[in-house]
Length: 420
Image (cartoon, rainbow, N blue to C red; front, side, top):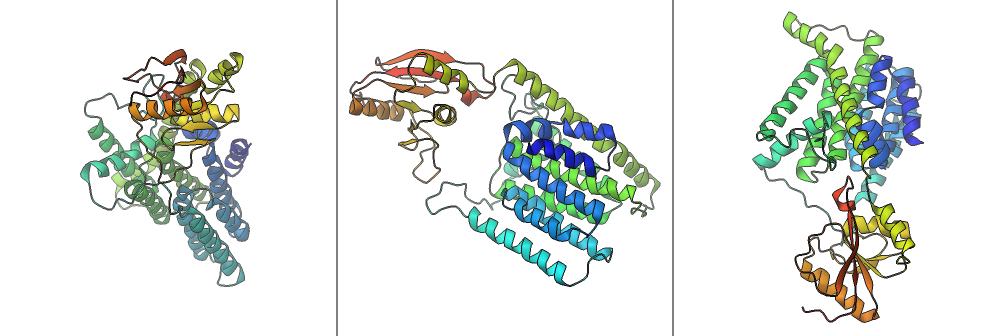
């Protein structure tokens, strides 16, 4: 529903031609990543395009409404704040520039709403004392810096490898000089975008403020995955949204003194956005092709198997992500060795042991089996046990999922004193 509503909002306010709208709507991040897989980011897109659209179409008429939209947006994620706050600042500066907003009640109410949204978001974002989270990284590391820079290429051109496990892969991953190629691709992308936004310095400043903010967070706090790297692409589309709207309103009259730079500007404005959206469209086709051919996860198949074999009421020990899916589908807790707790979903506190060795897994499983004096099931997502005790019997396995952590190897473990 949210993704469909976003389609309506995007098209209603869109300054682009129809086929450009189609390319965006059926692009990788919109049609697949943020609408099917990482769905919690679809609300961010809806709020960003709705608030930007209201500003474009009605100027400062609905400033309080836009402010409330940003208030809600800031409760979405840290990425929503990094992207949204500069956009709000841009809207306020533009309204001042056009004399549509003067100091007074509306401005102060708007700022109060935004400040309240930020405070509430930051308070709820603070992790608990016993929380498990990545530490801040402020030391310079050349390799890490290049990796962060290369997320630009991954965000703008998310063409995956043509393999079943395509998630979070990149077309250049199989190449020997992939790091260098991705670095060049990222820098050229930024160069083209600079030329594209050069006629409107405020949009250029907005774009780099958001992009640098996202890259800084990626470097210092959390590197993330493809869904996080796509934020730089969404920021680019939003800036283009405003740029093309200004073209329609004939607000971009400045010209460069150089004919060469002028020609590059015209070229990038006409073709670069279409090029990026076309790559996104192709990437979506690749993803959908593999989605049709292979299951994303085997969790549903496993759940049906357990129920058909009357195994669904047995105690279950599970590895991380796959077991979470099965726990949810069975609507009963699973024992997670890395947290040493029976849970529906593991809470990431500082008691979590991220790496669980075969010895730890076998010892904990045998201990549980002996305590309850009953057979138990163990759900593993890889068949990588080096040590396989005699009381561990592989009864079924399910392979071929797109996500490696959603393949399953089901063991039935009988009570027996552990060798460890």
